[in-house]
Image (cartoon, rainbow, N blue to C red):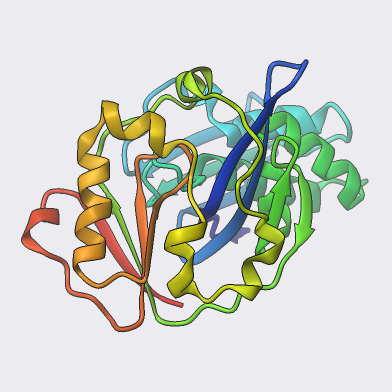
Amino acid sequence: MIAFPNAKINIGLYITGKRKDGFHNIETIFYPIPSLCDILEVIPSKHLNKAIKFSQSGLSVDGNFDDNLCVKAYHLLNQHTPLPKVEVHLHKQIPMGAGLGGGSADGSFALKMYNDMASNPLPAIELERIALELGSDCPFFLKNKPYLGKGRGEVLEPININLSGYLMLVNPGVHVNTGLAYKECKPKPAHFNLNDIGNFPVTHWRENISNDFENIVFPVYPVVEQIKNKLYELGAVYASMSGSGSTVFAFFANEPSIPNEFVSYYKSIHEI
């Protein structure tokens, strides 16, 4: 069984409150990028001497394989419904720690694949509850369509966004610690109602839609702000940091060229 866990971007991200459980309430639009994806293979294997064998290739990922969300997803789901022994291989193409949700996508897609292999699969609502234990944006990846996210990000409302043209992603390779970024934030009410985004053309987003994490990340990593400014110089109709960074995305009406300044960065262009 093979799947292609895809990236996402956040269009607008407002940190609206600190919760009693230690998390923060947010408002954001999760927008999937199907043309940027990892490759995940899961094979049942009766002959393993352990429940799951995990391997990885592609982009390097820090940390122990036991901490990978694909592995954690297996053990979480196995507590609720018996799973067969499996061999799992993940080929990474989405940069990690980049605000693109690559790890969450991997864990969520793995969770769905394991559930499909279970003799007693769990219903979707139960699978979403388990996904939230993996990460705040994991329930979104089970749906994988544009959604307005509230609460921790798990309260999902369908939203219509009609986009066309080209999307450029640029990541300078700096790693922003999400936990520390949240620690530095100062929650406040969202200054724009993302439910109204359909009433504003993309050309008006720059004046209305923002990411609260930019105020935290830009002073520490000026290169991220420099990338955003350069994307506007190139003719972007809207540019923003995704998640807690450090990837910056931009929408263009026409296919852009990649400037020399970005030669050492991760960069990609996607038609939308």
